[in-house]
Image (cartoon, rainbow, N blue to C red; front, side, top):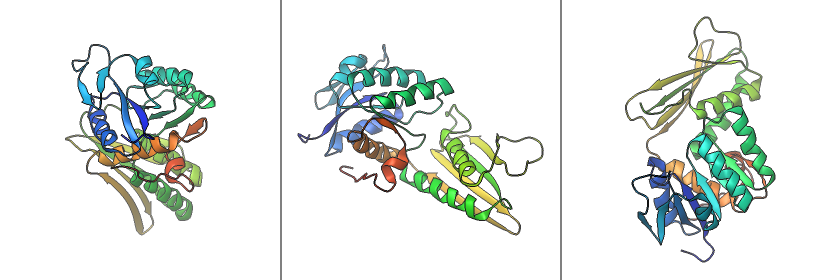
Length: 266
């Protein structure tokens, strides 16, 4: 580990994403796994994850041993950990979705004390997809109907996906479209953004944005073939957040002009 490496408290370290993220952190030059958290009673508690880090269930001790929090846990757990991190002056990165309005407002409010970054999708490709969708919605105009189709594995609980909801918000903001209707029934309303969800198999994730116009169609697609690009984006978010002033951020701050996310590791 480099003397300047930022130590990261990884919450949910034995989940599917957590195990991948732990490996990425251990291979990075400018970031390091400082502590690893799981729920009380997890069968792997005490497991040696390398570099002197053992899996624990004490958030305060884990955060005190770290410089930042990376949390992909359930919304209530993320908020609990983020509030503690803010009290300890540790910045926060989370890719969790499904926050209700009150939880999201509470997470945003922590940005007054520390830097907080939340994003439904940390992929560089999805960031670009969102930007292209904004441009297309503005340029194609109301003659083109906008539809979003998202596919995920059978175990994904939320539908539509958080990424699909953010894409719909981007379309609405770019062109005044709306309202958004999920899994529509009945006739299409003028200007609405349609959302449809498919669940099955082991699909990592796919999002299509379709602009359907008179005599022509434009389809933008992002297809995730594995989860490693999410990990790379999460590490880029950490590199940004450990230098950021208090505030509430998204991946546009990381990948956008001036974001400065330059790979320092895998």
